[in-house]
Amino acid sequence: MKSLYFDIRDIFRTPRLALSGKKIWVHLLGLSLGWIIYLIFSYLALIVNGQSIAEIWNTHFLFPCLWNVNLPIAWYAWLIYGIGLLIWVFIFLLASTAVSRITYKQLKGDEFFSSGDSFKYIKKHGTAAIMGPISILIIMAFFIIMAIIAAWIAKWPVLDILFLGLPYLLYFVVAVFVVYTAVVFIVSVILAPSIVGTAEEDTMETVFQSYSTLWAQPWRLVFYEATVAVLGAFAAFVYSYAIIIGYRFFNFVFGQSWLMGGKLSRITETASSFIFGEHSALTPFISKVFNIYTPASLGMSNPLYLSATEVITTVLIAIALFIIGGSALAYILTNFSVGQSLIYIILRKKKDDENLIERKDEDELEEEKDDEPQNDSEPTETENTDTKDSSDKESSE
Image (spheres, rainbow, N blue to C red):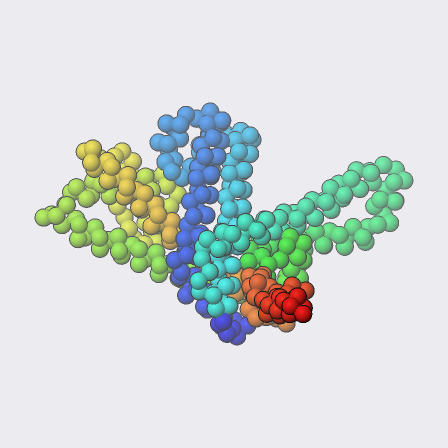
């Protein structure tokens, strides 16, 4: 079990705790699954909007985006696109819950809690991480709908006195509550995976803890979140730059004229054009921040001449580059998830004086239950032997 200070000093552990293969792997799986679903729904939305698959591919490649289309977009296309984005958000919440659980177990001293164990956990508790924020949205929607009904009734004579004049102060209080609930919704989206992953809370308790945390510790919450953001940005930059240096070193060695030379350039530039090509949303950021200008990032979209074996190699390298780039994004998300776990553990101690690290979780309680001795009503082996010997003695007599 790791000792915590339960203050800002614990937040600075975030980059180190996030640099974990199984945590990055969990978020990488979540990113991959979310991206596949997003890709399908985005292409479907653009097809429904009247574009052909070839046109979509030549424009967007692997990163389609409706905001990058110079055509009118029908509302139903936006709806399909929105569903894909929403599913991706749900997958992120589940992946973040799994990472929070791994972090929590690590803080408790269990270094062997695997990614597979975390998947079993979210299968059992993951619904609360999604339904918590949704429940808060339902609360907001209820009051807004009631306000619309009251406003419609109040437009009639006499009824305006009953439904506007008399309850006006009540409406004001409710309006303030709805605004507060909107802020709680943001907090819930951020903290819900950590609430579920560390405290094993259900949906109702997740909603309550979201309200309670914002109400009891607002300034610490804001300050800690800002600290996590700064630390995460710095750690992600270092991690990503290490990847870029490795990429450049690899190309430097393999690209020597007496080794692969131009063949490497043809393969890598073609492979990267589908990941960091002219129409990729990632290209401007990567090119500017990491100073990695290549023909692919400068606009190459038509593949160079490749032989049959080079085409296969290009596909494999494109997949590898996708995984490498995805690991950088996964590390950013891992920093976020680990940071939220530490924040909630600290704030839970501050507001409720409850140390979640020392509290026995469901796994520990189950182990204790399994280790309990057998029920006293069940005869032991010794008792059975004594009974048998007594019966034999009575028979002989």
